[in-house]
Amino acid sequence: SAVISQKPSRDICQRGTSLTIQCQVDSQVTMMFWYRQQPGQSLTLIATANQGSEATYESGFVIDKFPISRPNLTFSTLTVSNLSPEDSSIYLCSAGTGYSNQPQHFGDGTRLSIL
Amino acid sequence: AQSVTQLDSQVPVFEEAPVELRCNYSSSVSVYLFWYVQYPNQGLQLLLKYLSGSTLVKGINGFEAEFNKSQTSFHLRKPSVHISDTAEYFCAVSDHGSSNTGKLIFGQGTTLQVKP
Image (tube, rainbow over all chains, first blue to last red):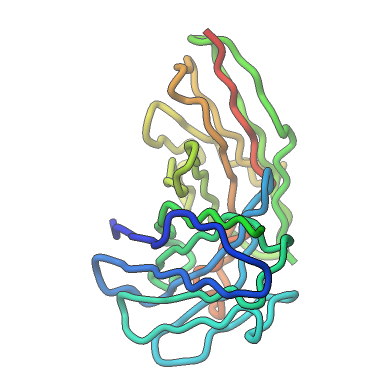
């Protein structure tokens, strides 16, 4: 199974700044996913990133706030822009084949706190 | 639209006791079902999955789950838990649709607290 490395593992940021999270996969994958996990909550899908095309955002998430890049089949970034305390969460990336009968593989997450 | 409901937010249990974590799903189409575990400060790890065939599926760490189509359930069980099983458990569903990109819908999670 794919091994996912996510950086940074945690960060503390000031309001109004931005943070870019990197996700590196040790093999080529079709789909990469970005999730938000608010404290004590489940995972909410932010967007799906397919290499070579624009990311597909879920309802309630917009590109201006959460721009995503997917430059190749092993790497993706998520930027959380104009940070506010409500953005304090764990952000997780995962990788998948694009087939619904195949599991996703997850990174360890980025724990973001906003001052 | 699909949804997943984990009926218990927290399940306290003593070490070596059996445990069941409940999961029900709602979908108008056939689905694939997954259980993931999240240990503190880690990402999610796949425990097991149901795709088709036998309704009883076995996973890692001694866990198993039973798919019940009539009750739209996929409950997770372990006959004897260890302290190390203390973690958050997530049930997830993915539908068979051709437009699906492997997207998962997660339940709210169940915290399993194993006490000595």
